[in-house]
Image (cartoon, rainbow, N blue to C red; front, side, top):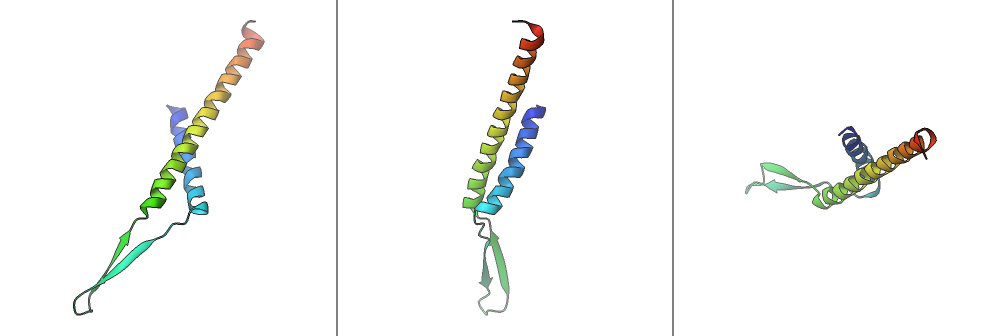
Length: 87
């Protein structure tokens, strides 16, 4: 559980940083005027393409971190077993 949590945290941090660095986040908003043109409201939207691509980037880094971590643990266990445990 600890490995999964830390993989998710690391993947999230790396994915979010790389998303903002390499993908263009378009903050979209538009203004709605009253019929008289006096009162206006601003509507802010989320860039769903950015969120969608960021999700896959975060998920990919989380999986890579988890797989690498598991591989390193397995290598360390095998090396320990071969050196001290048996043949």
